[in-house]
Length: 396
Image 1 (cartoon, rainbow, N blue to C red):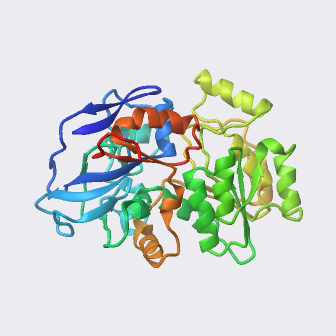
Image 2: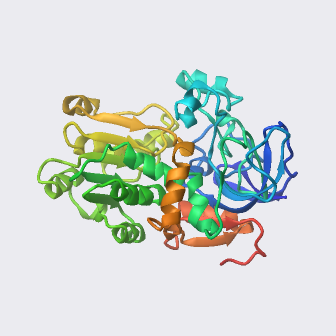
């Protein structure tokens, strides 16, 4: 089969690899009909996530048709059309039973690596380094899906792939980020980063009752999409002081909750940004926490800081005293995708939201190397790329 394989920093290739097979009676094999490039994939592409090996198959946002099942799979059958959550969960451990699916105790065979770095391991993830289990990803023509009775959700007739594909990750991620804000009537939510997760966080905040959403980015096409979703927008390159701008827009109070949809590769200008870039280039730090610093200063007293953006290591020069003094609440982490699947599928089916709004580029799988570069470098007004593993090779 064809698959997108990591070959080193800033290098991915589409290669012929062996088809996956059933390794465990709880596995299923899915013929991937559509897959996507996630902003988190760029952390792999840029070389910031350790334990990647040449030939690793990338991708954690995918869906398709079940073609084979293991002997213990009862909920699925060949022919079922499914979306696969990017987090792999067993369904039986303490964390799964308490709806903390991304903290699953049993799905990362390399848990010892995470334990050395973080004390405990979370769940395994598709296509996201050996630190996260070494599972082959879904940017391929076929994928092996472990614990197939627990993760995949069946897709009803009448919905297109693009309407449901993002149930695999970015729609639940944006929704959980907004839910973590504990939104009340009249609340103002600020979202840093108007990439795909930020776009879904904006729309989810409105679905959950926010009165206003303020979206912060520097790219016109992203700000335009955010405005189309109902947000007020700030191009941070056009304001002298972002913190003061947010105070002015909120009557001096600050946003009730702030969402960091950027994470470890934050862009910016000034001395703080230069400091972060320098440390990261010299490999003294995994992360550029510029946005996180801004959020701690901007958020209203007693407010919530919600972090769906990925961080990897130790954060430097963080004004944690501001968080303590203001009594901020922190909520963050990998998305508990399984918790939201039925809820968000119902919202799609009812017409409350059509997630396909975020797609800007539709390409054959063979174009993945170019697509990674265009997406990473924010060229051609690219916000979200969807790949077709079975295309004839011509871009849509």
